[in-house]
Length: 139
Picture 1 (cartoon, rainbow, N blue to C red):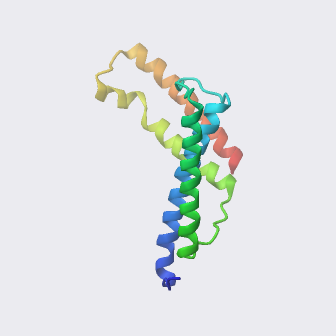
Picture 2 (cartoon, rainbow, N blue to C red):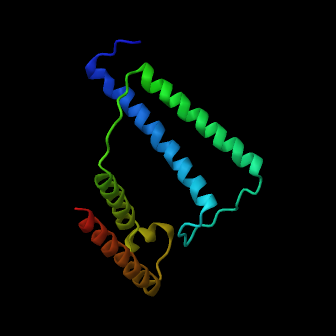
Picture 3 (cartoon, rainbow, N blue to C red):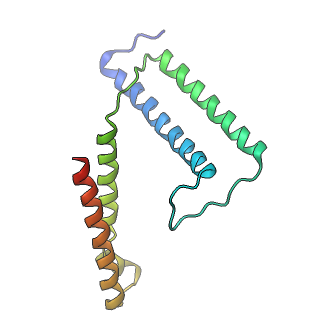
């Protein structure tokens, strides 16, 4: 067991957190593959090979085992995350992305039709308003 100075422990904690967040993303993709989640503009080609899906699950489990060993070796404690705050952070990042995709930013792509840009900005504003409502709900 390593003696890690307290002021350096946060590095190992952050690495474990980052790895687990990415593994959770993979798990969510696998759940979405097996369960029809609400999707509008994305449709994944399904993996029909059950053996391949089983191998993916095995590899994911092996990665979780490596993460568990990492956490033991470097004394990474279980990090309690306030789920509501995490949703709030994700909603705020979504807000940043939406507001950064304004009609004015489309000029950089050569899109200048004023009617198209007015309609686009109205829809962008509706997204912004809706995400603002979600953020207020979470606060």
